[in-house]
Image (cartoon, rainbow, N blue to C red; front, side):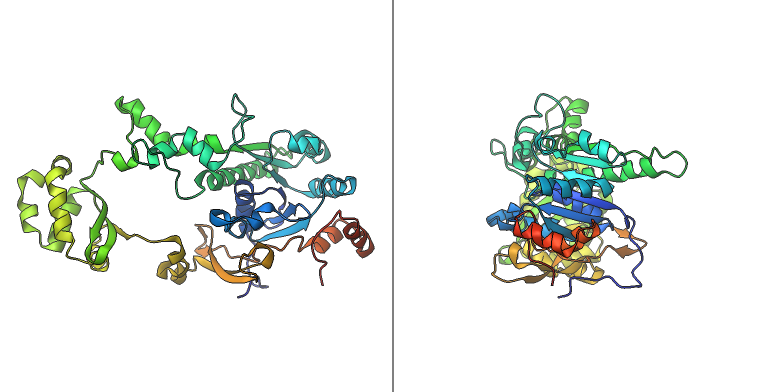
Length: 416
């Protein structure tokens, strides 16, 4: 599959010409860089000589690198060496944004902290992705699951007494998005045609605070009702019909009937005249009160249909429903395929567990600009894949680069 979809006729992307240097790993920082790269920024991912450890994760982490490092260039660099740091400083001096997600103080010890780089490049927008913003928790080590547990999200996701993390790295991904939003805001402020400051900013995005935004609706539910929110599996639904039904052939389907008009349509769609005429079920709140006897009867009736039959009936009558999909099944989802929501991408062998490069598809950013989706120019890079290009751009010669490689300052395979 092709990994480069650019052409002379491709219109410039919104962030074309913006340079970003990324010192990140795992998901949060890379997600920020991916958003900026997809929007057209030139993102240079600086990796250790052996490559980002995320390339080698097993199990649920196997897709991290491939999922969040497309459209970037890779430079494998020993930043603990004087010459490696010198290259990093040269990159920062020419950059519009600098991304990092290491423990507090780590970048300062390397001479790559905000205060040092601000003096070097006053226009630089420095994005620090952390576990916590400044405060009592700031020195704690955080992971997505840690903040889900302490931030109420795991409590809301699992059944009573069984806290359960969400089925995706929601705080990492959204934390990276807020980092990117901060970059966009700072770019606007810096470069505004009438009142631009010409100066960069320090942007901080944190997992814990991101998680708090995710549970804000439940916090405010308590504020306005005086009653604590129940975990989602035990919640009191505001609608009578809003759940997963077990149907024919051991299938499942989620269906929702959330208004009195939809109730009338639902009864008509399935020929439930007795339900439609029942005075106890006329309005939604009555149906909520009647759930104890209504739901068993409704489940019995719907069990004679397959999930596909229910889906067709709901779609025909404009009612909300959903098949229960597994993530891998979405690789050939008909809507995503038809609308261009999946783009071809090659995963390099050093981020693959198949012993070879992998041609696949991956989801694009969930937005369209002027009706067009943002495509993928390149898949995730191999370790140090663009080192020669990046270093030549800094003024280094082939001899300089060869020496740096021989001395272990720069890694990766030389460009052929």
